[in-house]
Image 1 (cartoon, rainbow, N blue to C red):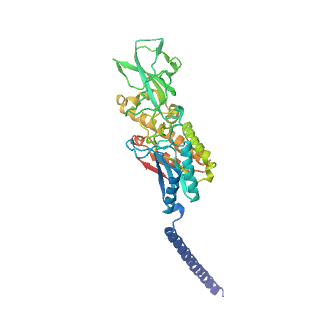
Image 2 (image 1 turned 135 degrees about the horizontal axis):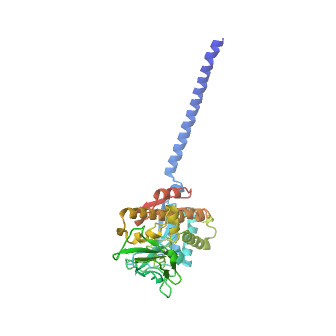
Image 3 (image 1 turned 120 degrees about the horizontal axis):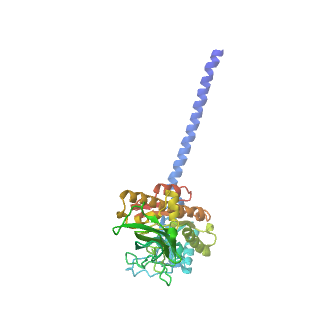
Length: 417
């Protein structure tokens, strides 16, 4: 009897296992059939979140309420789930599209409200580009928050020891290299409304030529009085003295509508980013109220394509924090890299580029999520196009993408070069 019982137990266990497998297989088959049916139904009648979304170009800012309603109805009819409003200018030779009102003016806001209200009726999602064309900015951007560059002046000092040296203010052209007007505000004395002193350095002269060895360059910034623009000089021998300042670059939006011309913001500065976002969100709230109750589901950051030397007020401090040494004695490298040893240039430029990269990631790409997107329940959509920055390796893409995609609200991004 004990022997029979020991053989019966494994047999019963096997039967229970086979029966369980049978019912589990039937259930899996049923679930598979259900999944296939849902998949098929999804292809035949795609849900809203699977339908395409499009750019809605507002050429030259010229739109009217009736036409907006007609176009949104047409989009909805063919199955488009939403659109990104993207105001943009037209080439100068285009005389067909008359200029409309300035971006975010009262008339412009009314058109945006019509689009948002119409989209909400049709359960469509709307995104809004954060400028007229690209590079963030606009006519509301103050000099303090506008894009910045670095400028310098130089004088030669020969054989003098002791006394005060008057250092000339760096020249800032009102026209850029392409002959385009720089959007820089100047005081009556000819100086820009916004500028900050960066550094004053002395480069030794050997037989009338600068010795570009950074170990021999002396930082004399602490001896310079920006109020009277005089340097307390106590060196002997022959020197070339450089005065570096930070001021606006005057760079404009790339292709704004005719009445929406304005400077781009300082993409490396947290204050500039905050002011830009708060202004736009505030203007939309004027006509829409709480944005959570509207069709607006995304704020669109178009590409960054600034040109020339870029700078920001916090760069020297951030440079030292990241790289462990002062930037001042290496500033001449930016303007005359061929004069320095190759190893010096490569190391400094790598460190300089890393610093700009970290500042942009922190203050332009991550900050909006933390302070503006979450607070208004609006995702921040991004378009990564860095132009000249990528050509010199100025963006730490690994850090950038890890930072950006750590936010759940990042719905998409574009990278181009």
